[in-house]
Length: 191
Image (cartoon, rainbow, N blue to C red; front, top):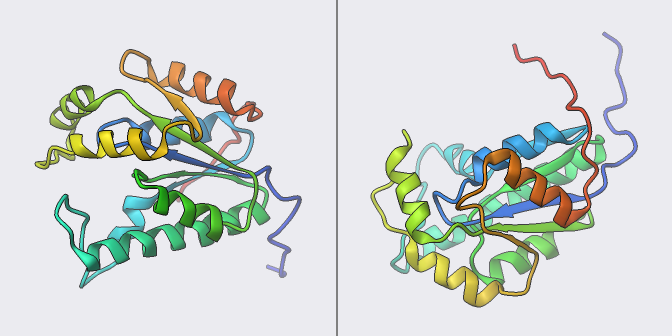
């Protein structure tokens, strides 16, 4: 195989899809990426899983090392997103971003613009019910993050209450709120 050029016409920005655990980020991000003509889904939880030893998951209690790793995950998501943009794929990053400093880090670190920020906000009760119903059951009630997100990030980005929306309806609302170009999904193959 001869060497090929990886980059092409850059994609038109990046989507950062946020919400508390159970808000539907991963499901909606994958569905959104599938509706865009050329897109990639970057699940930030998966980047945390790359840490084989020494990894610290976020908690409601202050943990300086876990907080540092939140920003490490975000930095790696930005690096990956910029690479996909350069190759012509619009990245959809899904991450729990509830603090202004975390969102500012994404804005400062991403080289690709524009950044379309979308918050899924079904409310803590609905998110908790969803957490209890999924295979990846969480034992921590993350309701305080909902209040933090609404307080610190109100008025920033596109907010979607997806408590009563289907996944497809939520994707429609994101496309309408961001102006991203929907199109037929590109076929993908996985080995």
